[in-house]
Image (cartoon, rainbow, N blue to C red; front, side, top):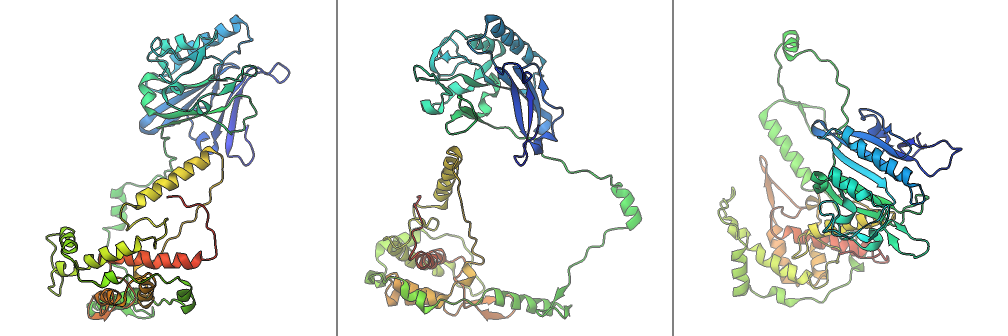
Length: 464
């Protein structure tokens, strides 16, 4: 049975519609997995059903769906269920990973010392008369995964008694003792609507299905292909001129074409409107940035230098350029005075991108848990370092409180930049990649863009 548009196929084993519906088990399997099953799920009776899933490296996992007789059933019905459950694991290959998903209507209590190896230290409530589950688990070396994770009662219990209003644990996920390490967590889902008075159970495990294989066509052997077509002739793709009309054949033409390419890439046109510049608030100028470097600042810069770096074609040692670190330290100190937005992570001290990724993943998990929609927008800045408008950047620095002389020193580090492919050409539109100042300058530019974008907006709750 398949639900239209749901993407799942349902396999059910139960009783006819005319009889009392106090039994019945089923599997809901994603349609893309159904085609990879070695066989369809097998219905043992109206209370037991099995499914075998293929996993990587020719391994299999057998899943048993169980629905025990309720407390109101006769002792004969209860004993018959556990006899069938006792016989079923013997039919499963020992190399298979075995998982039992069941509503057992049994309270197992918290006696971890007596049932060590079966019952975990995080049980719930007391044991009831329908306690054949524990001996069955002990005999087959099953472990009740629900009782091994420290969770709140509302995330552990699956049913509330209608009279005492006490939460009970009646539904379990069982695995063999050797496979408990693959279980990440087993807990109940509070807000899932399953048309039942029991809460649904979620169990996360380390299981990887075999990838779907593409149809393999029958190809002739490699020797036959070589005999027919001969040896492979390697070549290079043709290179055309910038207008795409002339085929280049000379090495000098190739080098000239590469120079044209990088000249266009590194000098992309960009503009910042005066209106956007005027809308940014003016921060009080910090004249301390203009002061000569102090001895502690110089020592700090020296400690941040990388040793053993070779000079470039201009024979200037890299340590000369590394003096920009002093400007970087001062500029970072200025921007950390509340000028950068709280959401800015990366290129900041004690605020890396890893923290932001962790916050995003936590938000995603919480939304999944609470069955809430999450809308995320991903923005990729194309050639971010190569398209910075420098004239606007110097104005942004002054808006952010940098004095004129400090801005002029940063300007001098980028003034007259040249790039070499064949002949030298000027670079006028980028911040120097590899310079210690470039990430901070890019953060400053992007922060100014966000301030102008959200000047009249309330973007929501900040998560840091």
